[in-house]
Length: 425
Image (cartoon, rainbow, N blue to C red; front, side, top):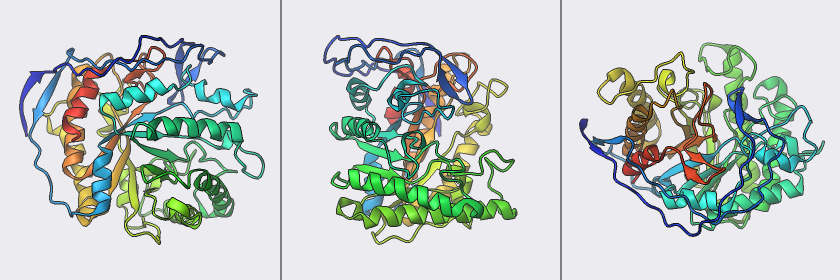
């Protein structure tokens, strides 16, 4: 229920020092990601500054959302403590399938123009984010037997440690590897896909075996029939679609079996499992199955939901307006969240929305603030944790989900963050 609005108060993080981060080239939109326009990606000076989070340009809605009945169990307590997350998007997930980059370590900054510093992750923690989602595309960093390049894996581990050392949760995944020759979710490519998924997760499980439960593994990112007319839509009445769902079920089983077999703390580690395209429909379809697991209730359903599409994800031909007073704005959110609650969290099965957000459309800040507050409040009421997708893109007609400017280590849209934090507890 929508009550009133009030001016956002100032939320200030501790400023540790005044060192500044050297910037790199501007970026432009390419296939939904920001691609490099400058070959330079070196950070000439690591900053020790934590960004100050100070709002005041928008107002936050006062919402009253009744908490839903939820079982009391360890898994739901675990995801509740994750609180709210932030994606280090377009970074380690960047790819260069043309082979033009000879140093694969340069991929980290290829799309965002800057390497990740500890101060960036410190800024997430200071702002209230308790979870870092770390998307990683591995296929540009493996040999013909899928052995991961050690310097790249070392660098990924370094950034994982930025989060873990802050007491944050960290989600590590396989991201833009949904390609034939690596993993492609259908029966025709299943054997090779199982080999790839097993090889990658065997190495990651061994590398991180001693990390505690705050490190979470996410088996696959948005597994789907890439390049087909069915790519983003699962269809319960279509044989090709159902074949892909079954392949995804099998790949997720390989993921779980591989991690559990590695022993150590991986025997009980929480693992995130997506349905088709990681969509809500992909998890809600009857043919989606959680893998068999030797651990008790340590699987988290992984969902991505840029909902409502016309506001949150569609290009500028979609709407830039969103209101808590408009059923057309709110009902799509309530609809899919209620269905996730009914099937999963009401039964004690945890759900994490690993990606959500609303792109900047001609500086529609107030609408995005209202949306973020409402989305997080309703998710948390149903026992669901959310992670904002931040691709460090801010201007133009592309997918501008950026909140935090990594070049200057500063918040461009602190009001959205403050609105989310208000309802993330």
